[in-house]
Image (tube, rainbow, N blue to C red; front, side):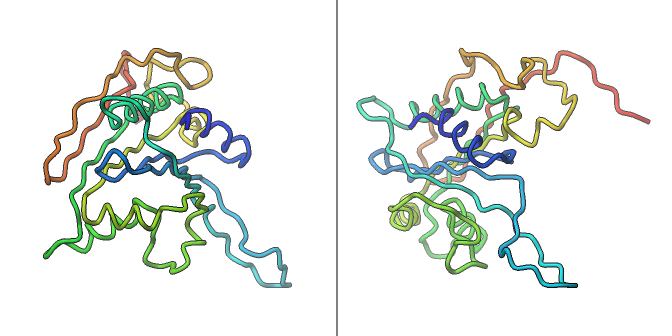
Amino acid sequence: MNILETVADQSDAMRLPLYAVTVTAVAREEAPALLSLHWHGFFRQTPLHLPGLELPARPVPQWMAQFDMPPGVLDAFDALEQSLLEAAWQLGAWDVERLERPAWWRLGAPATEVSDGRRAFGYYEDDDSDNGHVMADAPDREELMRLAAHRGYLRWLFRPRKRGIWAEVQDDGDDTLDESGGRPLPCPVMPQPLHGDDAARRTVYRLGRADRILLGGG
């Protein structure tokens, strides 16, 4: 899967700005990964119109697709992260966040850790069917979540300026962006090795740069 092309195709189809792009992978290279697009937008759950009754709108569900890890490479996670950095760079993201999370199927695991793990795979406690939160083309999603519960997982996140709601920020001080809100390749930021232990880790790759001094309004 080409991450940048997939984001562009879905963005053109939805005609909505993106809030964030995430990728989740079980901590084993042979397992597929999940790409999620989080939209900024609302829709009415039903076309029904009742006089005098305003039916509430609901957030547009996140879109999720399953894809195989890069084959035939020495380090599949490194190759995946490189493609993510390149996509985020071209889409004008300020940074890319990588979380390394341990297995949560263990005695004494905090409830928040369990909830975060399930949400990373698109499962939400307040929706048993998940249809209200996720539009998924991921046949192995449930099995991947079960593997992650025992093996741990990785989750990457970036917020695109190009094709995203962040384009509405008129002056965020990022001097690396072109007129479209993106950046041309090559991406100068390279992947860093995974820690590979059972601790929760967070790595942030800074892509943007501010060369100007921004003064806040009084």
